Length: 161
Image (cartoon, rainbow, N blue to C red; front, side, top):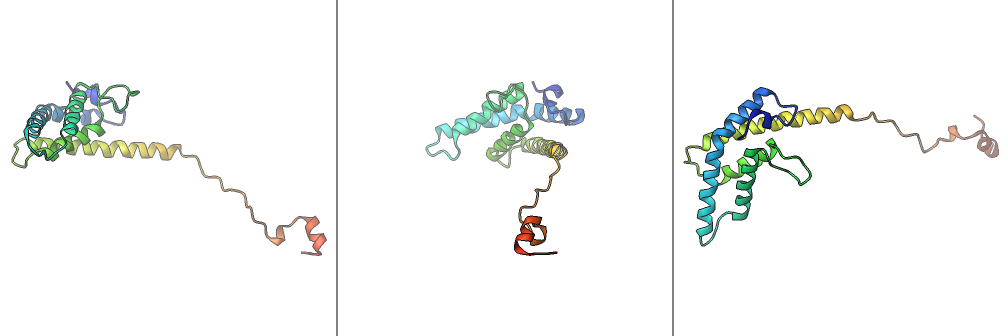
């Protein structure tokens, strides 16, 4: 079960944002699972599937991991909830959901909230990296003007300035 503590794995998220995502996720998750189960079952029995069944099975598995806060974006990362991958998977579910489905509004609200979180986190990351960026030191001049020649060069050529 997704809670505000599991959503707040990123320190830039506020308690209100985490609470809103947890509420919307709790409402939408069972319906997303049912939609994927129905679509996968129908596509397996179809003579010519219109979607990639293996991809939808992966989405269904990873949605379950996100719901349990055990999702790992890579093998070395700690398990948890990822708002980015949650948004990607909710969009995948929206792609296979018919327009007449009564839960599509709840899915859109969840996708909107996750997209807003994505903007907040990306802005915080951008500000962090701009603050860490070291000032640029201009490189020393490489080409030299005749005026900048050494005294020995000037006397050899007879230049006097």
